[in-house]
Length: 219
Length: 219
DNA sequence: TTTAATTTTTAGATTCATCTAAAAATTAAA
DNA sequence: TTTAATTTTTAGATGAATCTAAAAATTAAA
Ligand SMILES: [Mn+2]
Ligand SMILES: [Mn+2]
Ligand SMILES: [Mn+2]
Ligand SMILES: [Mn+2]
Image (tube, rainbow over all chains, first blue to last red; front, side, top):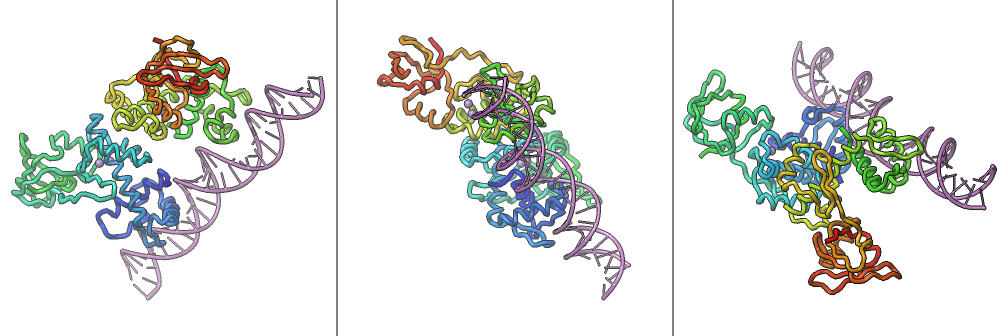
């Protein structure tokens, strides 16, 4: 089996390569894992020996099929546990990530299958991220950052790019949650900020920074 | 915090001293943890330095108040997770121990409090073992081994001493589960075996070995 | 296209949990 | 109460996972 640590490295490499076709660099991994480049290099050799990553010295890494399978299974577990924590134990969406970081390493496949069934085979986690099936298939996600919407667009909140407590609590304060309808009322060329309307609220001023972290699906 | 390994040692020491007032020996711990006496000695020094155990070289160990608190909290978590697995995920009582061995090390207190509430604050786990409260208080357990019952006694199954899959599946085969009424019909002086009656079943022959592992409450 | 800055890897230590083999202490037997 | 058996501890190693500091390779700048 793979150690807790190996699993975390594979997950980090997955996340770093999720939206690019580029190889992942040692420093990127070190930054994401809060560790030193030298430690990363050590682990890369180990993961390479186990055929979980494609690694050429100085050229960065990518996941092999086997490594991808492990990473996706960790993400599946993480997100299913997050659903459990929110839906069954009434945690708030900003409280579950750290606990899921631990739970995602619990081993039994049978456990995850039963948890999946118990939760009604959810397809999204509390942050709108897709939950892969047992075979590693992700549902298609046709969402885009709010920052890419035009004036007049009607959309609804479908996910977030920033999973930090700080950001999620800020959204709570604005009464924005998954599914909230959003209308783009104005766009300020100067600083890239937006004015948006959401039901039962004054119109909101949203900074470019925030708009990039809000994922929406157009209606 | 305490490592996974430290927690397992504390739990082992707890279980070994649960029913005696004696100090626990190095060899006993080594046997329970499937490790070597030398490794145990190393860990005992470490736990002693952290004031989790009272340790005098060659004289055995006992838990300090702090060590007791940790051990009981691990046991609380283990048993609550077992209830979750059986009650919510429909695992059988012989399938949950190993998974709970992993889950018991998940850190968050908030998680356990909420799990406890979600499960309806159960006072017994699927094997009839008491679940301590958050403050470490165990419910009184007035059960005794079936082997100590006399002919004519009426009791009901309230727990087991052997938690192995093999034993629990054997009980399934006999249709014996927690709460099953048991009447002692006969006792064979020769080998200590018993003949008992349970509802809707032929009378059963129970070896002394088995009778010692069945805990009952008299009615 | 040299030189400089950055990134990545190696070298060498450290901490944790484990092991085997040997020494020391305790307990049981003669 | 000596001697023998058993238990426990120490000594010394090993394999993860981590670190710092220094060397090597790559990339960017002059
Ligand atoms: Mn998360
Ligand atoms: Mn999530
Ligand atoms: Mn158990
Ligand atoms: Mn149990």
